[in-house]
Image (tube, rainbow, N blue to C red):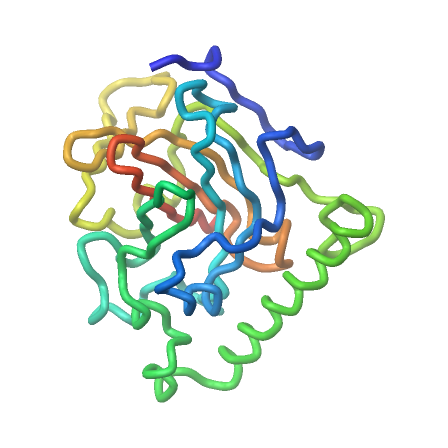
Length: 241
């Protein structure tokens, strides 16, 4: 494994060639419904973090829900070993598309949950989608993320590379059963805050994070993305501060 000298950067406001905002066609063809629930914010060629992963392209996603609480909180009957409260996972295909490792009913806005939602929730979904479209249009014309004021561009990424960090996400909800998360609370000043996440014994890389607000004017304070290269698994969780 060849690394790029522990690449780490914060508050990325200027794009590198490995970063592509608002990517198109990121989901597998047999799950077209994913675009109803997830908005693609930015793609990252992992060659920027590890040269042996050049050409492996992952995509940060912002869910359109929840309007309050956390994602998956109301749909526990449709959780599985990969997707649970505050956690969702995907398989990255060879052509760098996402295959969701849960089912459509995990999302509260799926049609069979219509008796569980109110007008406020539906209005939230529409507002987030409309905000996303507006910011995407502004980016195409001005090259900046402008979810609020014309003179207040947001970061494309808040963090890229580096180590896992301890936050509310670590204890908001247990990691799905397919994965194992360990937190070493006995040691201080560890570069990864003593946190490791693995799948079948293979450790996840911390990839990046960004606030949903930067692209949609709404969402988690930090969308965290992890990648397990051996099985090409993408794992997301959300920090609410």
